[in-house]
Amino acid sequence: MSTSPLLITGAGRGIGAATALLMAGRGHDIAINYRRDAAAADALAQRIRAMGRRAITLPADVADEAAVHAMFRRIDEELGPLGGLVNNAGIVAMKARLDEMDIARWRRMLDINVLGTMLCSQLAVRRMSTRHGGTGGAIVNLSSMAAVLGSPGMYVDYAASKGAIDSFTIGLARELATEGVRVNAVRPGIIETEIHADGGEPDRAQTSAGLIPMKRPGRADEVAAAIGWLLSDEASYTTGAIVDVSGGR
Image 1: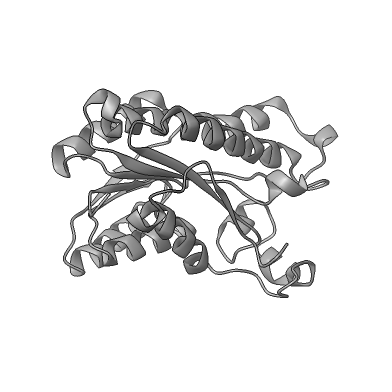
Image 2 (image 1 turned 135 degrees about the vertical axis):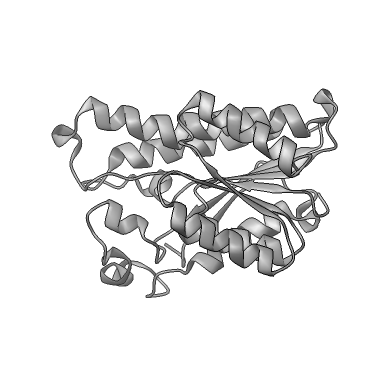
């Protein structure tokens, strides 16, 4: 992949922002997708530009097909041929049992976490696959240990959406194995990011430390390190892998 431009969805904060900074430090130009926090995305872009790399900010809900197509067109025009995609955008909802949820919540969860990942991957494949005249690349999907543990009593819908990401990763990796595009996933455990506040438990990372064999939550940069390896040429023979970054959980 050398130092081709990268698109990172949901990159304004947390794991996405940490990955953007890591990869900019390795010489990549970065397309920063965000949904609502323009100030955070702009601040991140400024930091990347100060490192001597190009950065553009791309407001788009990954569940909005027209907005995603427009986002990829801007990357084509402003950064050039895409070399990698990190499908980091995702949501959780308030802690609840299945019998307390409504279908609107499920649709929104699946639209962003699953369909958004599939759509961004589709448009990246059309640019990177040798079948389409591309020179190859790498896709890294963000799954979750919830896919393995199920998140009972919290958000089984989120866990199900991430289980779909695991299956999608394996299938797409095999589909593209001879086309120069590697597809892998990272499954974070409990990480200190703002996503817990979105689920109504801003202190969850610390209060759940006792559930983790390492007895501490992870950091965004620790997840970014795994993503960075999967994007790099050092992982040239790795595709269809799902890497747990969970402190042993």
